[in-house]
Length: 207
Image (cartoon, rainbow, N blue to C red):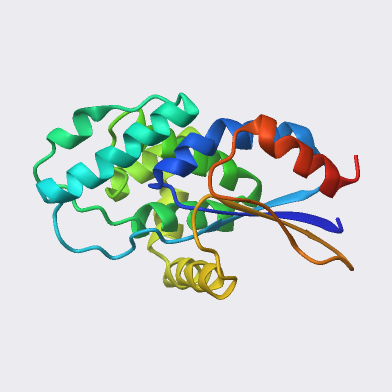
């Protein structure tokens, strides 16, 4: 396939959760016209301190904006947690683990993680929770656990982070169209509703 859509996102990025329904429509739209490839951006990888009240206020403000712009549901009980460390590396690595096992399931895993974290208040920094979510999209728990702990998966996750940086991705979600012999096209950098994104996708596909 000579057309690829590169999607840069983070499983714990609120604007990416807002963009999740748009991605569903995009996947229906492109069908077999382009190959969708998921790359995890590493929004806050390796954070090692628990959230402070200031951190919570900052994050909640983002959630309010995303909820208003996208209509996506949020479980604000999250902010009642007293010991949460906002480390996005485990969730990113979970996407990569699924991608290594079954690449076609990576978009579903990303979407499942978004819903679990934002709408279901699940702890997506917990490997046991991540294994259950992988099972939800069709990856057996044992197989996921092996891939998740594999050093190659950890290195591939870091490679995704570096690729996003080298590609000068300035925010998530970012969607880039790549076609053989053509200059890559940024279809969106940041959240866009489907009605604003669809014309750009049509133009890129040559529809």
